[in-house]
Image: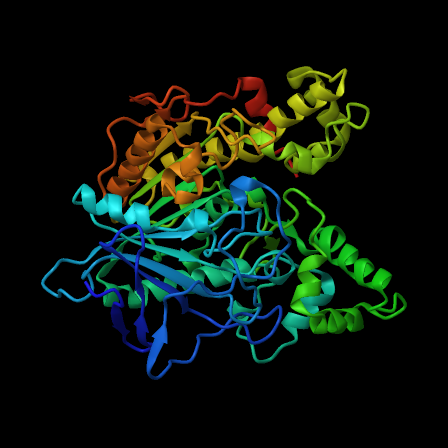
Length: 535
């Protein structure tokens, strides 16, 4: 394979990639545009084709966002931010897969990154797909890995009554384009469509696509599974530490109070917006604020600060019930694997500011499902989780609550709903559902939750990037290879034996035929607590 591989993409143009530095059998094609943002808070548009050869050897820009100090979600690798040109994707493919037309088309794995809809991007070193592709070739199950960007924070997930009116009055938009506050999800849809339409140029099979993602990326997959207009874009899904109701969409008026009004006040304090202006004029000024300044307004370390919007265009009604209705899931999806880590809440509790026991339960209240009164929440928290008597107590209990509310219950409810699809028309019946639990810690001393199987701990094992080589023992390296093989075989339709997989703290892999609707660490009391109440 040439060190400067080229691919002609019909309808787009020619791209010239680069041979992976660490694996000569893998080619990388970076910064391929799948859409362009021509106007803030509007749907993206398809990019123009290009003439000549496009340089695809360097990472492209990602969505403007605040910086983070968390070493596990380090933005290392990101060098450029752009609102207009962030909608690009990276493709990692086996050598000569695109040039040898006699070879069969191979499965494709599309990565949707996490970051709470706040930060992240495909240029992060953590998400380099080289080792995953190399491992797929080593076990003779080759795959193509695609990593995508999408709009984040205020650019992709902002809503208010003024913004709804602004979009609804735009006569240029079709009814289906008048979704508000869900531009990030619409971007993802465009990326999935681009892969479906163009991946054959790289030797990929558009009928064997696995969408995989972590945290808000997994939540996004949950939404795509449930939104009819987004069906048919992938055939399998891997949802790592997240489900749609991990980041439950809220009505526009809620997003308005939580994000839009504070955003206006931020720029009022800077002198950019006159507080006496009517809301529509404030919106016009916000649209003219530079992307850098707009992103900086979200730099306050809020956990779960950004959420999709119930706009009654893309997302409708009572989301907790709507998203767990088996009849709504994509009938063309063949298999779903979803799982969590035992200590998900430890990395997130600091962002909620719940370490002070005198303030507890404070902001935890907002994570309770609709229909629960404030009084019942406080009572049930104390009864089931205990009442903290010190700051360490508050931190520990808050971490447990966050883990159950944001991860374990939504994943459990989604698992049960997926298993309930048998009664509905499915051309690829039966839908195979697999649960996993990742309990292997990674020794990164800089992390506040050092030594725990915390949120996102599985990511270095899935991608096996050089970024964490110094923290990998030989046992960790072998486990990483095994994790990659399970993910790869899943993308090939080879679902592992057993309904559940456990990656133990000791590095072993255990499989069990246990029924998934009972494979949960949630007691009957916790299940009742987190189940949505009557609205």
